[in-house]
Image (cartoon, rainbow, N blue to C red; front, side, top):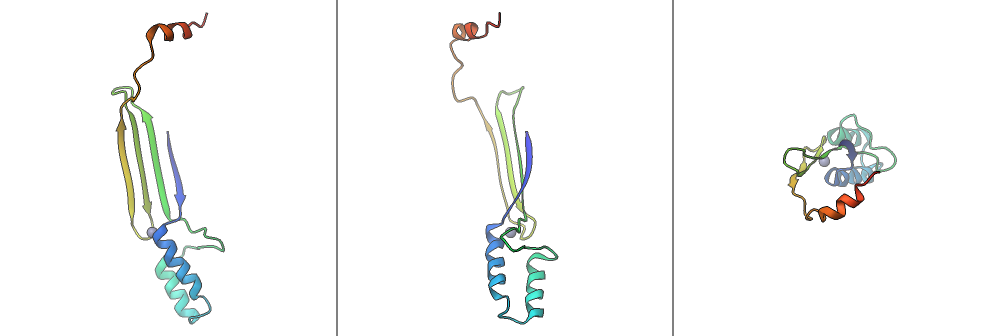
Length: 108
Ligand SMILES: [Zn+2]
């Protein structure tokens, strides 16, 4: 299973809030210049809808080694910050009693 999603960047968000607060308080051309520096042609929208952080998540149970593989990464397309984790997790619970399993596995 894998998925891609988009999120706000906590670092870029602070800069955007600062920029929004400067609206009307600094000359318009300066404001536009700062905005372009910060998010290029991007639109931060009326709400906090600017979401430059790409999330890529993948997880699966490996048939070969029996481990749960989790790869998760976040990367901000704006400031370049990245966060990632890769884990291969073994089963943490012993298998159930085999006889009990057999009873439940009786499908007629
Ligand atoms: Zn960022």
